[in-house]
Structure formats: C-alpha cells, structure tokens
Length: 151
Ligand SMILES: [Zn+2]
Image 1 (cartoon, rainbow, N blue to C red):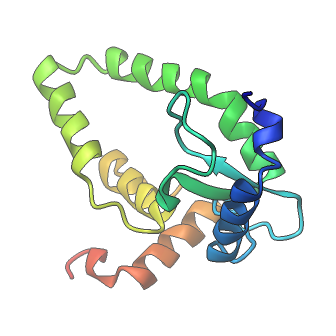
Image 2 (cartoon, rainbow, N blue to C red):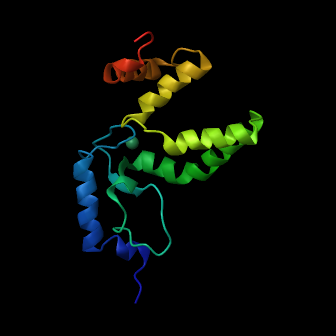
C-alpha cells in the first residue's frame, strides 16, 4: 500500500534525515539565516517515485517558512524569467551552450550569494545596489580575498 506524501513525511526515515539536515545547517535558514521561524527541509529537486529520505544530503537544504514558500511558489515563474532574459539578450546558441557549461561546471563557493553579488559588480560594472549587497560584497572579499581587485 503506498503512503501519501504527507504520510511519507511522518516516516521515521524522513524524520531522521530531516533532523540530520537541520543539525548540519545549524538550525538556520540557509538563504537568510533566520533561526526563529519554523524551518523546513527543502528538496532542491525531485525524482518521481523516489522516497523523500532517499536523496543525497547535498539535495536537502534548511529554509525558513518564508524562503521555502518563495522557493517553491516563485520558482517556475523565475525560471521563465531567466529563459526570457537569455532570449532578450540575443545570445547565440554557442554562447548559450557556453553559459550552460559554466553553470554546470562551476565550482560554486559555499556562500554563493556573495559570489553572485560579486559577479554582478564585475559584469554590470556597478557597485552593489544597496546596503545589503554592499555588506555582502565586503563579506565575500573577507572570505575570498583572492577576488579583491589587483590581488
Ligand atoms: Zn529564510
């Protein structure tokens, strides 16, 4: 007899996996650092028929309720925006393949948000847009001094 997804989330195998991920992530949202809201363990991708606990740890991430809601609800629209942006930018097939390879093969730093803020500054030739981005820019350079200009 097959369990519903809700029932599967009550399965002790998922409960254990979930606790391991929460502990690994120090009981904080990995996007915004919130440690006081309800936390969810999010699957970054799903494979049909696979049990929720049968994923590698790297696929699972702790998110607060707000970030989890945004990630699951806004994701399809946001992915469409990315595709539209690539189309609007008039990339050639060669350039799109190149961009795809970069994303697939990137050795993403652990704090990729900071990396993206830095990338934005490099590509757009602008300083970080607001105070938070300026702060994250400084944080990135503290963590990755090798990225400092002229280093
Ligand atoms: Zn969050």
